[in-house]
Each structure stands twice: as structure tokens, then as C-alpha cells.
Image (cartoon, rainbow over all chains, first blue to last red; front, side):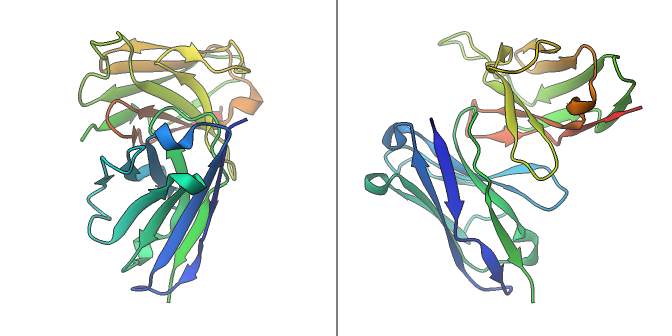
Length: 115
Length: 112
């Protein structure tokens, strides 16, 4: 059974950094293009960044470009999101999902940016 | 970037009545290589992650009740709940996976 487990969230102050991780199991992670998606409290789903299976094909939403960096370690079946210069409007639940339809969302990891 | 537009933003339907949600994409999601539409539908209830309902625009995920149906091709898609039940109260999202991912703004379905 495919599973995704996000971690690394927490409460940070504006301008600080955080690194999210997503550990995948139950499917061939190394050939799966992956993305981070976020959901602010009471709001809809928003694509943040994506990466190809071999680490190529990286893309970012305009609102995080230059502040966030996506990466992956296929030997660990893990996807990362380095988040720098965090802002209050980055407060959200962050999910990792394949760049496809997804029937096995994790519970997400909550980032709260507040002073 | 592909923009997904859902309508309406919310709708209230009586129990047992039909609910229809529309989703339009800014470009065609139909691939000429495999003749498939790269469009999925999700249901999200409070405090839960999204649940996949349909993929390839109209392929029902295992376990999804058959009162749910989905149709459409190209840039226009529809999700229909034929007979609304209490447990169907949720927010519904369309999602394109033709080029990375984009989600519609969501449609909140309530009981009238």
C-alpha cells in the first residue's frame, strides 16, 4: 500500500527557515515525479513546487520562487522542501503528492509563521 | 501555467437531489498521445486530506459510491452527485495533472 509521511513542520518567526521531509513507501519513488502542495487554513489546495524522478524538471510557483528549494534523495525515498525567508502567508498544511492523481495523501505537516 | 476554474463556489442541495459541479481549464487537458484527459476530482472533509474520487476525468476510484459520476473532455468537466447524502457534505476540487499540478478553487456542498 502506497504511503506518504510528511514531517518537519512547526512554529517559526517571519524570515526564518524550515526544512520539510516526505518519506514515501509502497511505490517506486525513484521514478515518480513529485510535488509539494499546501493548504492555508480555511483555503483551497495550492501547488508549491515539483521535481522529476531523477531530480530534474524542477519548477516553482511564483509565490515561492527564490525562497523555497525542492530536492529529493531517491536512496532514502525522501522528498524535501527547504523553506527560507518564511512569511506569514506561508502558514499552511503542506502535503507531498505524486505529479499525478493521488489516492494516498498523507496527513500533511503544519507550518505556522508568526511572531 | 494551467488555470483551473470551478463553479459554483458553493451550493446547497436538498437530500436526495442532484448536485453538479463544473470545472474549466485554461487549456485542453486531452493528450493526443493516449487520448486521455489529465483531470482528477477530490472530496475533502474538515480535518482530513483530500480523497480521490475520479481520475482520467471519469474513472471512478475503488470504493467511491456510484451516485458520484464525472464527465467531460478537453477543457470542460463536470462532477455530479445524483442523489445527495448527508455524508457527501464536503468541499470538492478538480485537479489537472497535464503539466505539474493545478487545483480548482473548490466547491463547498451543503444540505439545503
